[in-house]
Length: 80
Image 1 (cartoon, rainbow, N blue to C red):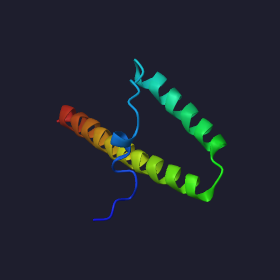
Image 2 (spheres, rainbow, N blue to C red; image 1 turned 90 degrees about the vertical axis):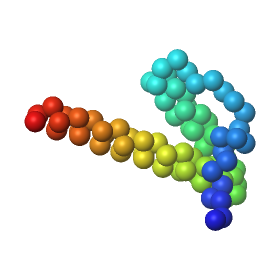
Image 3 (cartoon, one colour; image 1 turned 120 degrees about the vertical axis):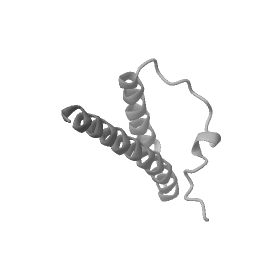
């Protein structure tokens, strides 16, 4: 299967330790995306960045859906 450009993004990038908590990590990621966007100068750079970030956001979305499903299922079980 052809790679979309983001599958190996984690391996391709330098390791930066995650912040101590999710809120701080999220704020850092948002700032980094804004800074990256400000530096993009070409269609190719934009396409590459969008592809990798969209892939990561898809992964986050799937995790979010899974956690909400699990939470809702636990609530339903508690009602029974």
